[in-house]
Image 1 (cartoon, rainbow, N blue to C red):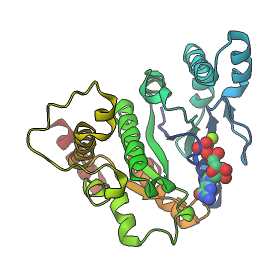
Image 2 (image 1 turned 45 degrees about the horizontal axis):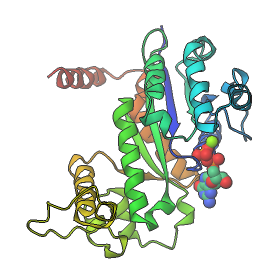
Image 3 (image 1 turned 30 degrees about the vertical axis):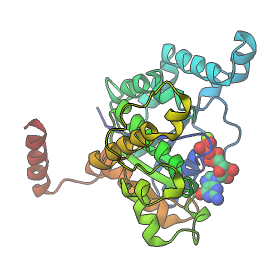
Length: 301
Ligand SMILES: Nc1nc2c(ncn2[C@@H]2O[C@H](COP(=O)(O)OP(=O)(O)O)[C@@H](O)[C@H]2O)c(=O)[nH]1
Ligand SMILES: [Mg+2]
């Protein structure tokens, strides 16, 4: 039984997931590596590289919306429930994919799929276990233009963190569309977003997210909407969120410019590290065994 390697590409709608997948495929081809491209976005329109497997051949979002009178989000959830009931559609073709391939799974952007219902986590579990046993890395994309609006950036970071916790997969976070902020953000400034921490909130009073601690202000009535959005409790919530991101150091970002081969190559190297792709490809050196045993021991401990 061989191993399989894959990446599941996630993030909000329009974050650049499909563009990233295309860039990755181009890069893999240029480097004589094979890939197997899976589209799981039933609302996808055009592709630079035709998917090898496409959820639109199983179920059409349009049909679902029309026949079941569902909106786009409800329709999408229905499509995934249908996929989960018909997993052979996905697992049979993947069965034949060998260890030299990178399986690239292009996902829809609706955040509900990741956080509100455990659909994607259960899909990921099916792929990662059993006979398929794909070693997977989640790639979570966030648009770099978010960094001009810190509240948006923190909300996006939280959604990345939430997806990361739900998925229980090795994870890379990616700031996409770096070309759009080039020249607009100083390098030093950008660095703060790559390793986000609480100072991002504190040094931007214009964001409205700054929390100034005052003694004895805990007794505001949270049922008053004005207090919730502008008062100390709102500021306090933001600070708690900022601290959470800061203290757990869960989220840091790789910079992506999809037009830049080096940038794609760097992101790919992180994905390969996370899935341990290269360990399966190269003949083992005698020392590798020792290192791997040491890792295994550390995991057990
Ligand atoms: N400037 C720029 N635009 C991008 C980049 N990546 C994606 N886009 C554009 O962003 C839009 C959404 O991209 P798409 O890949 O379809 O996003 P998805 O919904 O996450 O799959 C499209 O108009 C893309 O052309 C990028 O690196 N730079
Ligand atoms: Mg897409």
